[in-house]
Amino acid sequence: MKRLSEDFYPSLILAIFIMVIMGLPGKCFPIVVCFWDWLSPDKIVHCILFGMLSFAMLWGYRKKILSDKNTLLKKAFLLTLIISISYGGLTELLQKYVFINRFGSVFDFLADAIGCVLGIIVFYFIYRKKN
Image (cartoon, rainbow, N blue to C red; front, side, top):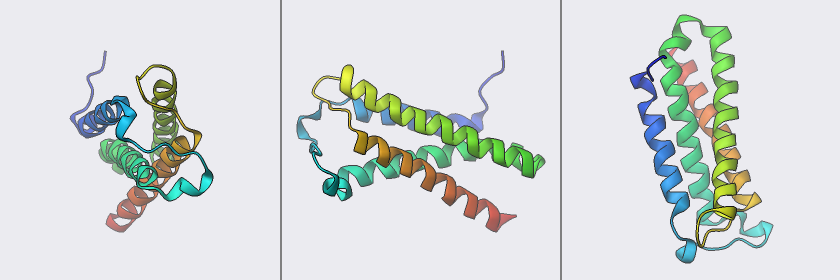
């Protein structure tokens, strides 16, 4: 079995941190009931956390991407997008059905997904600038 590369430790630690934050009792967190609450601080936090997760995952791929730029770059982006958005969906489902005093939200999931895409875009521009 392959050992997890040290390059992926930041994304693993961030994923654990996100799960802990999402699992905390939600008595102090605002509940979003309409679309216009979209720009609340809660949604911005979701975008930032999942943007950081996507960026950290791609950071783990950076050495492999440099060796095979075109093919691996596209695969890394797609895999990161699938994993990070799925993880966002998982956290929302756990909030809805498992975690106490937490409420899963489609709007939170959309914020997670937007954050994932933004993290990939930021990584792409940094990567492109360096190469």
